[in-house]
Image (cartoon, rainbow, N blue to C red; front, side, top):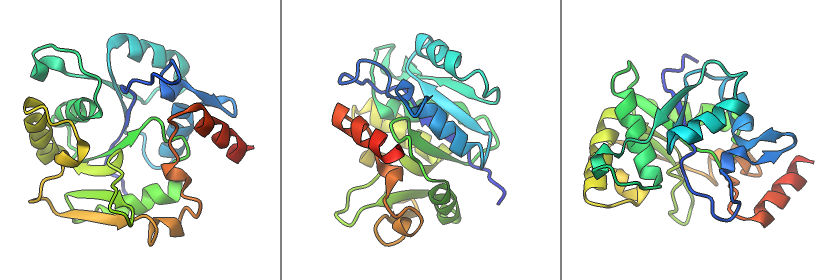
Length: 217
């Protein structure tokens, strides 16, 4: 499969519970982000890391020296008149803006707190994104997974820019009703490739981390 969609891992979120960036938390001897990169590079080495500031970039670079193909994207605060904001939307906006100048038309956004992303699910999402502007997993209760989704770069940039100016930070607001969107059922389709749905196992508190360690052991 010829992959023309770059992966962007968002690391800019604030983790008050853990006291350090989630992407740097180690399990089975590797940080979350290393687990992710090792899976993603089986598909493509067009991998970008979206960061909050230059210090965060330098911190991550120290642990990722073996991945010389990585590129880093710095959050662009110019749209906020220089005001600091820790928001996934700003990281996504900055990634859209950065990649506008490339050949890519779409982008696969992934949060750094999803260490068990499944290779088969990634391939499924890429296939499901064909002929659509956006491809996003959806649970039966209607809940979406906006931080594991494929977005259109140019259209996404315009929506993210508009929402930031209006201070609308909910990621669901990023989706435009005019887009052609493929909502991929998690229970009916994705579960066929990832039976335990570990792809969506995110870490928000210490108990989650302990459960993750148990799964991997």
